[in-house]
Length: 193
Image 1 (cartoon, rainbow, N blue to C red):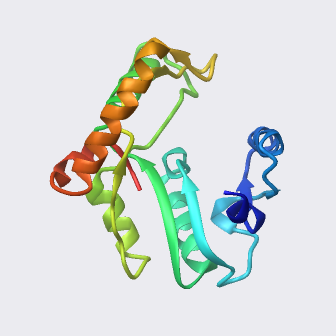
Image 2 (cartoon, helix red, strand yellow):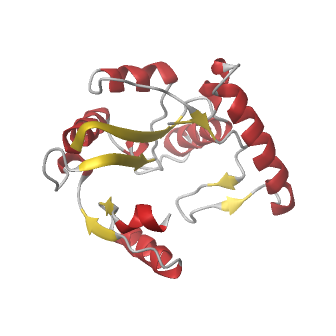
């Protein structure tokens, strides 16, 4: 990890997230440059990176901005570079819960600015990426139940006791191996990469 972070650059539009990342990196003695920037207009030259990793960004953006981010990732990748684009799968259990909460917050409580997220089907993310990247491979990860309850007032409340987390992670890993080998239809229920 130290070798990776020594040459890495972190980017976020949120000053608060950059502060949190800086604190985390400092606590783990990981030397990484962090800059504030917009993913729809990356502040890097063409062909700058061997790898780009987008961690759960696209679900917070409009379709148009999500497409711009993908185009920008392609632009800054060196020829033969690899982009890892992680998005929430539409049918993952925690995303079904989040979709229900969105419906409730918009239609029942009439929040003007609820937590909004865009969930992707495997077919949709594959289609978006194939229009931009030469080669696309979809894998799935994290088949855990929704143990975090997200609200506008708190980042998350743990709804599954921690004593069950280790066993659930092992089960998630087992399902992940099956989804990425012998049972590809399971990819629809995990986080897609």
